[in-house]
Length: 142
Image 1: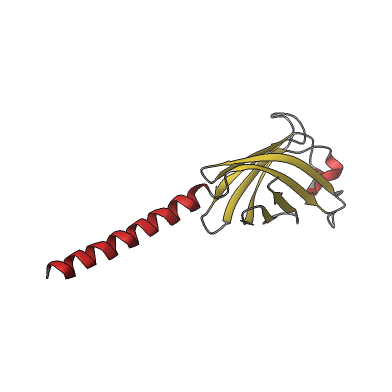
Image 2 (image 1 turned 135 degrees about the horizontal axis):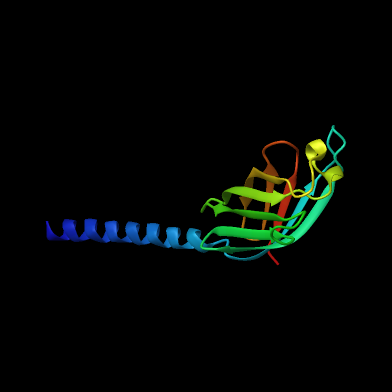
């Protein structure tokens, strides 16, 4: 009986250690500096295409990136969490730039926000804007 109990304990401890190691790897597996490319093609209402390049950082699986300067036209901030499986739900918030580049040709400095669905692996990722206009994100880890 003692041997059976010790064997069960050892198996349980090994399984728990394996789960902890997997969780620890997943928690920060994407941490570090990333380069982000955002491309939005022209829209049917005549909004011009544009491309932003900006840096982002991931710490403890939380992504934060920023293009431009806060409170200025064309500013964008991207935040969200990357899951251990690489799936991410991100949120973009910003202020519109020149009206010719915005859906509906809204005035400069009009606040906007949208959701981004993304997927990451160890050194790259892709994502898509989910509303208003098609925009594609490409993430790369230098």
